[in-house]
Length: 213
Image (tube, rainbow, N blue to C red; front, side):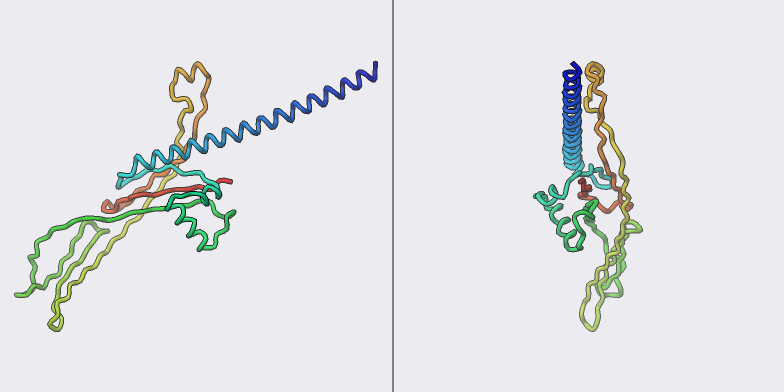
């Protein structure tokens, strides 16, 4: 009887240990799938935000993409490929890179101005076109040794302010459905806002790519 009881205890211990290992593995797999789902949702949201803000100018908002090094290497996006080439040129190792950032901005304007300050009886002039204190153009026409010289000088400056923050969204957006199903989980999405202090500068695009292990 004691022997049977002993074997029953051993068998029960094996069953409990097996169940414990199974539960641990299942929880680990579930957590891994949840993480993958959140990363996928974050990247889809970042892409949708990028598409919806392509026509912004002074202030633009973007989501941060979450990529592994393998995602970076296999990406067909020309911006990501360019960033990866720059990383290689700088000699930054894979395990040292934390984040990629890309910014594209332009200044485009058309100006019509009456030339009233003509020098003497010639066509010489010296004009300053000032859009704001950070965007100044100088255009001049002068005769030098019988040759007319047209000169153009541009003085343009701009600074950019970026703010990163977390935007939370319900996994189940409908309140009553959340109430019935007890789905109160949230997605926590990374967002970045970029602002230029020069209204003449248009921010055409920018990307933030964070490297995950």
